[in-house]
Amino acid sequence: MAEHIEDTIDDHLGDRADGERIPTVIADELHIVYRVNGAKTGKGSATAALSRMLRRGSDDAERGVRKVHAVRGVSFVAYRGEAIGLIGSNGSGKSTLLRAIAGLLPAEKGKVYTDGQPSLLGVNAALMNDLTGERNVILGGLAMGMSREQIKERYQEIVDFSGINEKGDFITLPMRTYSSGMAARLRFSIAAAKDHDVLMIDEALATGDRKFQKRSEERIRELRKEAGTVFLVSHNNKSIRDTCDRVLWLERGELRMDGPTDEVLKEYEKFTGK
Image (cartoon, rainbow, N blue to C red):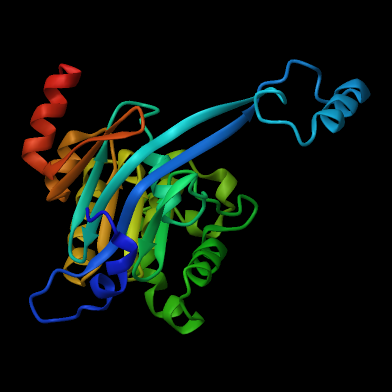
C-alpha cells in the first residue's frame, strides 16, 4: 500500500486499460472503534439521566464509555474478478470490516475507497417478517436498485434458486413462518439475482444443505466472471477453498495474512489446530 494513497486513488480507479487489474475496494490504514456505554447507573432512572447530562462534554473515560478497537490499521486492495475470503476467530473484526466497506460504520482513522456500490448480505439482513416471501422478493429487489420489470423477469429464478418451495408453497406465506435456513436462502437468492460491483456475504453459505451451498458457490463464480468482486466471511474452510482465490486473515482486528487461499488457510489451520 502506497504511503500517499490519496494522491493516487484517482489514477487507480480511473485506469481502464485492457488487461489492467481494476481496484474495486481500497482500505488504507483503516481503524474502526465501537463505543459502549459502561456506566453502572440504571439507564432508566432520573438520577442516571441527570448524571449523563452533567457528564456531557467530558471525555469517554469520564462518561463511563468503553472503547472497543474492532479493526486496527487494516490495509489492502481488492480487484475486479476476485473472490476474497475473510477468516479469523470469533470477534476478530471480519463482519465489522464488511460493514465499514459498505459504508455502515464510520472510520475512526484511515479510509475506505470503493469503485461502484458495495452490497452487504448477511444472515441477519432485514426482511419484513410479517410480509410474504413473495413481497420480500419485490422489496429486496427494489432495495438493491432493481426495477420492477427486472424483478418480474427474475422472480421465478429467485424462488427456484432458494429452494423454499420444494416442500410446499412457502413463498406465499409470511416470513415469520420460515425456518432460519429458509430465510437465509431467500436472502442470498434475492441478492444473487443482481450483478454487483462489490458483493459482501457474511456467513450466508453456512445455512442450507450441500445442494444449496453448491448452487451458491457456482453463483459466486458467475458474479466474479461478470467483473464483480465478492467478499465471503465463513467459518467453513471448504467453502472458502471452493469459492475464493484469495484470503484475508484477521485476528484481534489486525490483518495477520493476505495471500493465495491455500497458503493462508494452511497457516490458519496451524494456528487453530484444525
